[in-house]
Image (cartoon, rainbow, N blue to C red; front, top):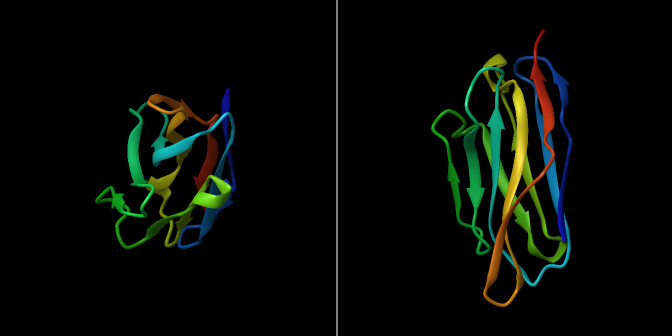
Length: 120
C-alpha cells in the first residue's frame, strides 16, 4: 500500500506565497511522474504541474512564471512553490504519483488534497 500526504495549504492574501509538499510512503520500488492538480468549486480537476523522475517539469499556462515544482527522489517528495498567488488559484490541491510498487507493476495514487485559499 502507498500513501501520498500533502501539506502546506492555507489562507493567503493575493500576491502572497505558499509552499506545498507531497510525501509518498509505503511499498515503493520507484516513482515515475508526479503531479499537482487542483479543483475549484464547481470546476473540473485540472493539471497544475508535473515532474518526471529526471526533473523535467511541465506547467499549466495559468501558473507559468509563478509556480515552481521540484522533487527530492531520496525522500519520495515533491514540492510546489506558489508565488504571486491570485484569487483564481483558490482550490483544493491534490498530489498524484505513478508508483511502481514492484518491477513492472505501476499504479496511480492520489493524495487526500490540501485547501489553498487566496483572499484578502
